[in-house]
Image (cartoon, rainbow over all chains, first blue to last red; front, side, top):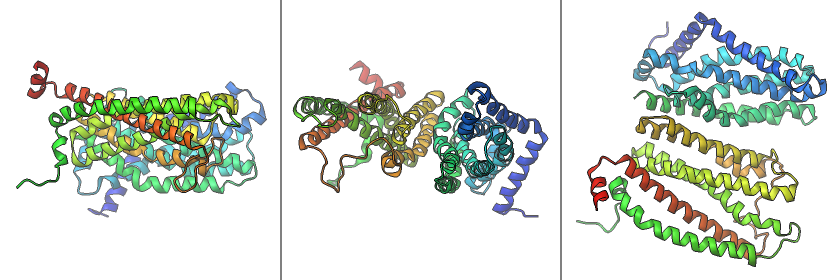
Amino acid sequence: MMQGGLAGAVFGLIQRDLLLTWRRRADIATTLLFFVIVATLFPLGVGPEPAVLRTIAPGVLWIAALLSCFLSLGRLFATDYQDGTLEQMLLTPHPLAALVLGKIAAHWLVSGLPVVVLSPLIGLQFGLSGGAIAILTFSLLLGTPTLSLVGSIGAALTLGIRGGNLLSALLVLPLFIPVLIFGAGAVASSESGMGAEGHLSLLGACVVLAIPFAPWATAAALRIAVE
Amino acid sequence: MKTDRMNWFQWSSPQAFYPLAGKLIPWFACVSMVCLAAGLYMGFLVAPTDFQQGDSYRIIFVHVPAAWMSMFLYVVMAGWAAVGLGLKARPSFMMAQAIAPTGALFTFLALFTGAFWGKPTWGAWWVWDARLTSELILLFQYAGVMLLHASIDDLRRADRASAVLALVGVVNVPIIYFSVRWWNTLHQGASISVTAAPKMAATMLAAMGIMALGFWMYSAAVTLLRVRCIILERERHASWVQIERVS
């Protein structure tokens, strides 16, 4: 058993969060169903023209992924805050940012990853080609961790505030915009023959920047919320 | 022994800062009015007509300084937020809170005047160009900082939470500034550069500089006015405020 060490604490936290989510499997199902339904609404609203659907598909899937990630962010710290676990986390000798990173990783595993896995299926429904689906899935794989990382800042800032979830949306969605632009742009630029490398590199840069900075900001916000 | 150096920290108490702000406001306001009058006169009447764009280009005398101020004020707001978080100084948070509405105003003004320039020049009120979009995000960020502050009842937490949000949003400022260079977009590149010779007539440049100074001084005056209101509101139970009210 890894005991006492920082890695042990972080992995223990991830394990605990995954177990908690597994006990409430309906939450994962809600997020995924939301993703599918939002994506399904677009062909019904815009009309089933295949050429139009193929053009809007990357954007639609990205927005659906963004909203469904957002839907589950409210639960990231809320239950821990209510039952006092968060205060215990603050009292541990480990750096809070590392523990927060563990919680974010667990959040991505149960809300981001399932969306990535499901996206090729939705891509097929929108009539995307095999290559486009591959790039779209890869862009989601690279981009959704950034959504969880940046979203955690909003979730921590609005912890315990009335109407906090809606407010968190207003705070964080503007910060999601670059990820949306690069992610949806990757597919569009590969379709137009320019190659997706540029956009994918920028997505990768976003996540590399977010991994050290976002947990740090979230930890600061959590300290403000709890004290 | 008294040193000659001024102790800046003496202004970090609201009680000391309140009268100082009151003394500074008229100066900033006067300079701002003179600059804005002179800048508008030069911009609209003296500066030559552009050979390509005709007279419609004259909106830049409001548009460009407003856009500068929108970014500059965000950085200043984030700077005060950082000082507040680092030194736990209450007036810093008050300054950050007081700057936000003025910053949002200039962001809106930059977008609004940009739309009026875009219609005759590009043929559209709005295009989804990198600079326009990132400036719009800046407006959302100002709104987010103000909304977060307004939503939290505990003032101490409201100050610090909105300070963290303001600091996180700073990443957008360089994106706006460099967007025209990083992406090939419709919005033209910078007309003024420190390193290259100006691409516009000297009067245009002077008018724009004077307008920017006017906006800057206006921001200072309005921010100080607002910070005085915030101080009175927050310190209303302090004895010096009671004395101030009587006198």
